[in-house]
Length: 346
Ligand code: NAP
Ligand code: ZN
Ligand code: ZN
Image 1 (cartoon, helix red, strand yellow):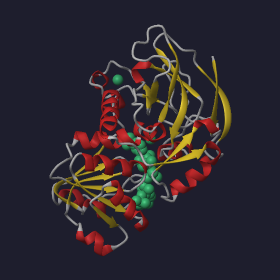
Image 2: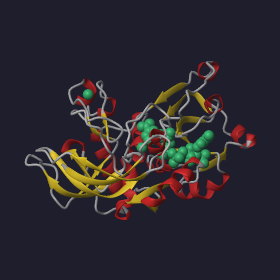
Image 3: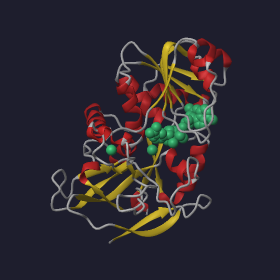
Image 4: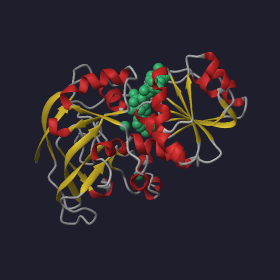
């Protein structure tokens, strides 16, 4: 077994602290890489706190993982020692269902295997990227460009693909008015992709102080959602809303901002169910939709697109010792716009 150093939550009520554990030896199809950086996703916090379902503890979070390959199995074809490599939210899936066969492993009908807070096919819990090394089957390891800033690439593995995938699926682009609801880790990537795809992008935010940043990210408009006048001005306005909000919010209000036939796409996952009046969708034949991360082929496509267009995340690099402070700031919406852990501080 491979001795591994990491940071774990021992229970939903304890703070993260150093924890040593073991990973499997490198199998014939496995890639091992040393982790240089790992992004901090709001999903890490949801899962540590058991917001969605009872988690598997000790829990080592982290699914925005980049680093350098240190060892490959005998049959590995895609990677060589010394190359950059990345892993996102999944480390395996059934590979046989109709979704897996189409490269939609995130929607595996048997259930994909999450990078952490899941169990591998061997039944052993999976542990994430807040650690010094990881071993993953080569089919779930991604290539990244050495032309981009490595720590700023890490968030593409979740925040990037989670926003890229729905924008591609609904073909959001030129001629569309797109609202990005919530300017955090996912939201700021949604702005970058929405602008790159040619849409008119408006940020809907609770934080007036993020306006200048939104414009710098390329957003065309900015609406403070606590100001009724500003909200009124965009009522019935948007073709799409990409909802990245992590906490309870007024869905009826946001649905009223869609034009006829508009689509509200949920990617944020608050812990409580949404409450929605049927009239909010039937008036104007609106659609309420959702989207989860992205499959492996599309994640590679997104990484290649970002390399070609120079797109990375705007990050604040942190020492792993400050992870609790980062979580506290994240809960207050004070993220500019993704915390990334420098794993050299482990
Ligand atoms: P984040 O960086 O904390 O950003 C969330 C943003 O939502 C905040 O910055 C804030 O933006 C806004 N917000 C927070 N509380 C709000 C409230 N009560 N009402 C209105 N707006 C509020 O989080 P993230 O990492 O981007 O993740 C966002 C959500 O997506 C989380 O629930 C996460 O679990 C989920 N997620 C889903 C997927 C998927 O596959 N679908 C993948 C990754 C993450 P403003 O200050 O601009 O208002
Ligand atoms: Zn995530
Ligand atoms: Zn499957």
